[in-house]
Length: 302
Ligand code: CP
Ligand code: NVA
Image 1 (cartoon, protein in one colour):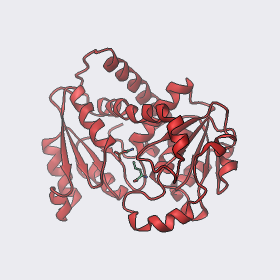
Image 2 (cartoon, protein in one colour; image 1 turned 180 degrees about the vertical axis):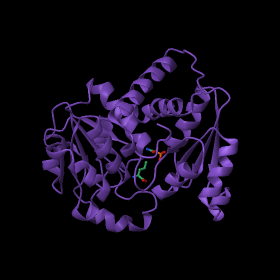
Image 3 (cartoon, helix red, strand yellow; image 1 turned 90 degrees about the horizontal axis):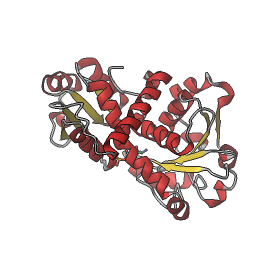
Image 4 (cartoon, protein in one colour; image 1 turned 30 degrees about the vertical axis):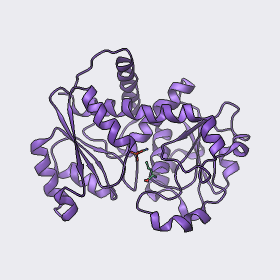
């Protein structure tokens, strides 16, 4: 494993190895055990979209690992004025030990990996959000003590989160059922991948059908970053695609609720359900730190 570009590239063993390492790093941090595995190393963090969790958790994670993180905004980099990603990749590879990038096109992340000579980590594209889903799997395993055989449900937009959840959860041995409106289905390549899992994968537009018996239920915003102008249209298209107390009645009695955040109460999740499951949701946010430290150590430790 040289990069983390998308979960489709990882084997089940690689995913489980990262989750185990994340558990170990969380233990070390919680017990004040120093773990400077990346001493003297520098991570560049390129952001072409906003971020709270990704930015702070990567920066703090590098610091806890004994390294440094550089925040590189699109507004300041020449990439924002049209310098080709191929050149940016080759220049930054001469200065840095790794790059985390949050951008729009998946191809840009793939190009960085192709042209650069250092590990590249995808911090979210329009196609996927692998770091988030590693943290999600870690959180579900912490709460449920296993992943294999659990039933995961996702309600809402067939977006980057849906794409990564489908791949990550199927690879981790979970059953996956997704409810999206017909016009907002997950990516075709992801659906093709999921086909190989037969009965373990279900896609419907019926929210209740998808949620039936779920051990863990996820949702995400109706309009992602870059889709702000479609917000009104999407509000109509996604009406009813909400996690709320009524929907949880058809899930398993001890269902866990997850949301990558930021959340829009009253849209994809009700305020009541969000607050009732806030501990699980903020555990999920915390685990971004630990899961990403595992990715950094795995990719960058010399
Ligand atoms: N979940 C997530 O990636 O949050 P940020 O957009 O705040 O980084
Ligand atoms: N789907 C959301 C996730 C944010 C973490 C977006 O892309 O904006």
